[in-house]
Length: 623
Image 1 (spheres, one colour):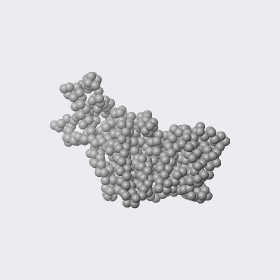
Image 2: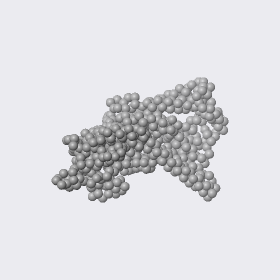
Image 3: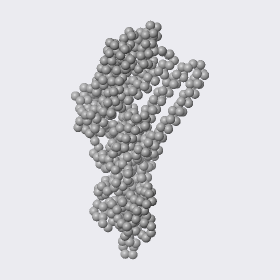
Image 4: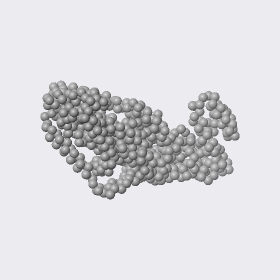
């Protein structure tokens, strides 16, 4: 019996565009039932962060090339052999592959959603609901870069999707259930409190706020944007506002008088003094600001200290102090939101940023325990493969059925191979006749370069399966095309070898690694079809919710296919090309890998899946 996944949506998650600024903002309700506001990172700042990260990647690559070249030269000088250089080059291929695909994933997962570029610009990736990004979410969003990068590595798809998304999400964020926020804690200067005795006989008169909230917001918008206006329009707007607020302006130039009025109004409001026209909740809003401003500034300083040192470095007493302060400002924010009655006030935004930063610290994923990693690989991944047998079977059909048709077509009519098989592959098949007669194997096997061949094969095959998976976000069209395309080419190529009576030559090469490699393609295709099902058949969920659920499932399938391709690549590079091994031995290697894989799939049968904070679904499985 297997329970269906239950999607857990945060109680409140809404995107909005500020009335006071051009910033996109997202509201999230925390587990403490406090609504906090995040500012969505703009496309420009994200692009700048990407440029910084690209430069860092280029620098690491350059340094690595220089070190590898130097080490290879030293090894050749000491031994007089090129074998050391071949192994070093193989390691470089693996390192470069890991760098390209792992840089963003590991930094985001282990550094709380920040690559060096994002950290420099104050950006952070967080999961829907305000949770710290998990490793699986980071993997999903970064594998989808394959699609977001198009066309031709311009990030055109990602930019367009982010521009049209109310929360600035590119396709990778939509599938991963993440968004990128601008995270710079704002600071305000709290004016001195109203002098004691104000309002009593002989004391200085109490200064009141004279503008309504709407008038104050209008004045603030003008002063914030005046520099971007041409001189004529700026003068016109200034005169119109001066006429409107003439009763409250000091003598002088209109724009200067408006700036002085705004400064007075802001100072008064920050001290909690309401306007004469304010009643009820409006007056309470100003009182909350007056009572809490010093506490908020103290928490901002404490927050900066904790972010710099980390929660784990604090003593028990310091942690208790920080938790108590966080609860106080969270309570203030809840009261302030109620009192502001939905108005977009500076104080609400400022306090929301403080609470959001504190929330991220509490729910930050510090590290990935080895026990959790083992449980994921040993139980969750094989369980998901068993659970997803339907999309995997569909992907296998899309791959193997066209392969069988192409095989039959070429065997029955060999000239048909020239219609869809690349000329280079046809030339290899024709050369295979000579190699079969000489007994030299499917390809040249310079033992010296086997490590390089193995690592290059691993990198290429894994990238292909990444693409098969990512193309599922095109409603499955890209995944289906890649499965059909590769199936037809592989089937036609095998049919060509059979038509030339040299099929055993190809089988002897493919047998050791083929079981794992071909199965991995079907599993990765199943992951792509899961994404497609979220778009085409979301069921009771919205498409965005379904994408997150199916994305979490699909990444387990990609983990499985990647592990399989690593093993298959090692076998293909180190064992498959050996010409001296008889066909029975190589078939035995393939059979052994199949048995081991079946045993792996059976692990974790009967175990129960337990949901964790930030996960979007949980299901139980008893087999």
